[in-house]
Image (cartoon, rainbow, N blue to C red; front, side, top):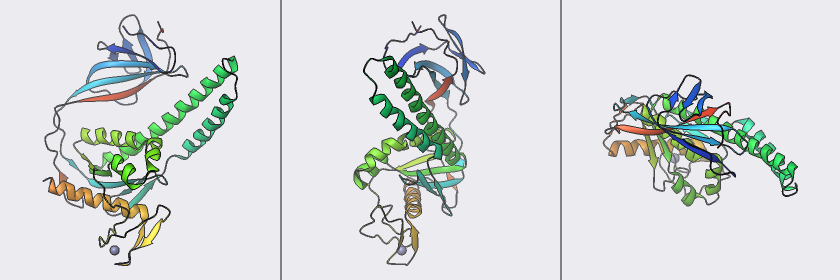
Length: 307
Ligand SMILES: [Zn+2]
């Protein structure tokens, strides 16, 4: 059986197999018993291991790793989305006809302000004092709330974009951050773009749709999506511009998303995948037989004894 090892930071214990996921609980062997749980996603495969962790604020989480016997996923049909990930808007999405902009949820900013205030208060507390420990727990709690709010948002958006699409195209984050703008490197880790792309990837794979990452530098902001004229510069503060070649008025992010989408379609075509711009078919090239996935499960009642 597992036990919690470290006293500081995140503590965790692994339970290999023999774990049963019930409707509102998880049953763990070795005298631990049933733990009340809210299951966030349906668990539809063979369970490999369950890792139970205790967060610094004293909450318990279980992460269930399970194996899915793959029938090869069916060929997905639907839209093709090009996404420009950004700091001003979290994501600007082009489906070839219209542009949709998705901002970080408003309450996220509120949590973050709260976090800053509580952290400042913590820094003024005396080392080793009881009130410092109390404040540390408060900070940890807000941290978790921020993380949960963000995860929730990322799950909802990735679900929305994978539910009616055959392919989603994004720029590779490494290339985007390193080449385009050095300040973006920090923003990338702050915004949760990486987590978002992971969520998208498994949700798309599950239904036989594709995630295309453009993994070389691509001038998505500098290219006119109408005539492909490329301007030499596009400073970050310019939100709208007019193409000097064809006179089209562009929204910066919408134009970038449209270019990303077009580049993805080009990649799909040269890849030999049948695809039509108004949403034809993308056939997956031999889906994987079995997939390992992590499914976070929130435990509500801390009934595990820490040994
Ligand atoms: Zn143009």
